[in-house]
Image (tube, rainbow, N blue to C red; front, side):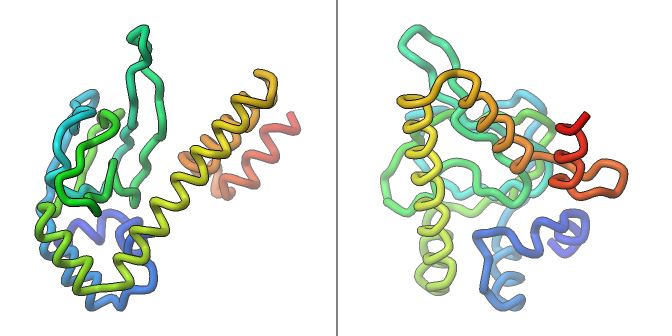
Amino acid sequence: MAETSQKSPMLETPELFAGLPSSACSEILSAARPRDYMCRQVIFFAGDPVTETLLLIDGRAKLTQLGESGTEVILRLIAPGDVIGELGLAPGSRHSSTAQALQDCKVLVWGASAFEATLERFPILQRNAKRILVRQLDQLERRFCEIATEMASPRLAHALVRLLDQIGHKVNSMSKSTSRRRRWRR
């Protein structure tokens, strides 16, 4: 596990582990199993039982649902340090979306019962999991409001800014926000 955390700086402070002592983080990480997914490989399907909690440590993934006409709708892009899909906070729950690797991905996996026991043992972890769910719900509500009230061009602008903030990279040693401002000025 130590090798994995050295390769991925995101593992030092993913949102799920915010506020936990480093010894607790190490203990939680050591209980995880590493798993790799190849580009385009499905991680889970909508409707599958939630049997694991997955933390992306390298690569990119997407969460999708199919519309009534069969059109794929991307709900969220997953970056390193993010939990993929539901956190399994409700025993017996099912995935509401399909997750698929957009690149080769490295994931840390905890079985549902092991993760549930970890949540009980570390209340800060449970608080962080709830905070992640509240933030995701807030984002979905704001996006629904945008779709219901705004014309296409402002919605597109909001979506592009969200994508840049979520998956932007440093360009020529500038931060993504500085780089974004310079690109938009051109």
